[in-house]
Amino acid sequence: MLTIATAAKTTAIKQYCQHWLGCVAIGDFSNAQALIDKPNEAGRQWSRPDIQQCLTSYFGDGRQTPTYCIDNRDIDHCQPCFMERDDGGLLCDFNLPVNDQLTDLTVQFEFKPTQANQFEVTIHDIHVL
Image (cartoon, rainbow, N blue to C red; front, side, top):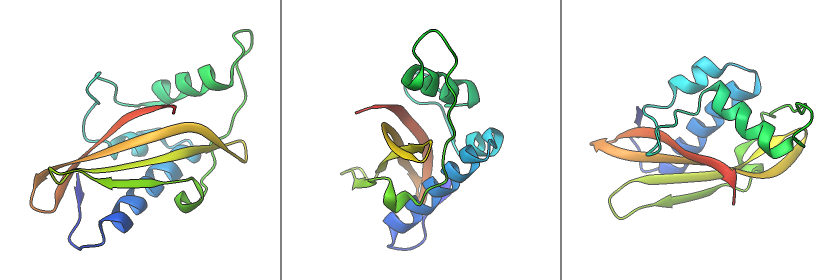
């Protein structure tokens, strides 16, 4: 659960997503998954196998397992998009940096308000937009 106690919501979301990206980049999927409060509407938690399957589909040719390395690049350089919904929910999309390149795989975070200044975090999807 994310607590945002200031008006600087974009900064707080960016830091949260950056922390998730940093965990995934060093292979610390358990801490990355701990940052996600609940599965998305399709029931996907975006665990290590989910993320690896997504990357294998993106980089693979169906014959060999691809080699890839997720980069811990500054979110500001990953074409982030921040939005606030009418219900107070927050969204953050950014392109996943892999193999020293910015891919068109977009990670879509959703922050749903639960209480004052409290947000439940979900990864809505990781896909090509």
